[in-house]
Length: 332
Ligand SMILES: NC(=O)C1=CN([C@@H]2O[C@H](COP(=O)(O)OP(=O)(O)OC[C@H]3O[C@@H](n4cnc5c(N)ncnc54)[C@H](OP(=O)(O)O)[C@@H]3O)[C@@H](O)[C@H]2O)C=CC1
Ligand SMILES: CCCCCCCCCCCCCCCC(=O)[C@@H](N)CO
Image 1 (cartoon, helix red, strand yellow):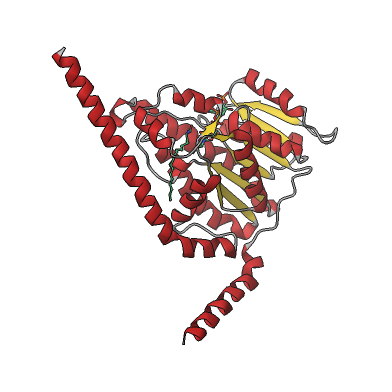
Image 2: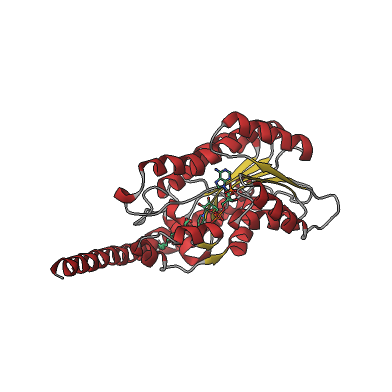
């Protein structure tokens, strides 16, 4: 009986592997490809642009600050692998006016050809207690992080469908996989990207277009330094659970996953566990990935419950500390 069950499982797994070429996309060829990176003038976006440029791609950088763009262009050009390569800069706010975003992307495509890979990396964060975050910050973050990814994607998708090829990356965050103290304005914008990516992937898969959602951990960038200035103590302590990554490393992983057309892109062991744990109804891009999810999800939930317990106790300790020092202040 046991033997029969084992034989059945083995046969099932073999069958899965036989059909695996049907669900695994063909890798994207970066040499000569046109890669657009929003938020490409700083941090993770800049490193993604450098990584693609090193592999022979033509780059369009999109961000608001022109000086930062030009400086980054110079920095990237140091890594050229042939003399035809171009780095184009476009100064535009990705979150304000759809028509404008569509226009500048049209111009970029006239110069460097149709977009092969779009990386939506422009984003920003605000941390604080729910009641301390300015009301307009909720709207602003949704604008930049969510709509700022919708607009460029919406602007390139028709051409990608016509060409029956293309890749779109959404840079979410580990805070787009679980909600943490201090991230009431930021997390929802990153969760939203996951919903967008799942729905879009189902629409465009028959057109050979693949969508990737990246969930980076805390990463050493100018944006992270800015965020750290006003981060609540609770958020700091909780985040220290996992260490801060280098932007180059995060970028390498994202570019590799985008090339392979993986739906999910995560960094490190926490990232791996979180992605398995939150895989839900997201598409799989390899049999191995599906099997890992089936086998590991329960165990990772148990580990996750311990993490949640420790986060709750951090929050409680901070609250008690605060109340103690407040009452001490009053009695003085
Ligand atoms: N660093 C981290 O710890 C993590 C970051 N992330 C995500 O990764 C992405 C990049 O983060 P990071 O590298 O730290 O960020 P940085 O702040 O270092 O860079 C942000 C980039 O986005 C551009 N940008 C911001 N707002 C707009 C806008 N409205 N229109 C166009 N461009 C804009 C900025 O240029 P300019 O200001 O000139 O427009 C800049 O190029 C973000 O989406 C972030 O949420 C995810 C997980 C962890
Ligand atoms: C089995 C499950 C294990 C779970 C481990 C969870 C560890 C959580 C650490 C979360 C760190 C928050 C990252 C946010 C980064 C970000 O987006 C901002 N820095 C942007 O600037």
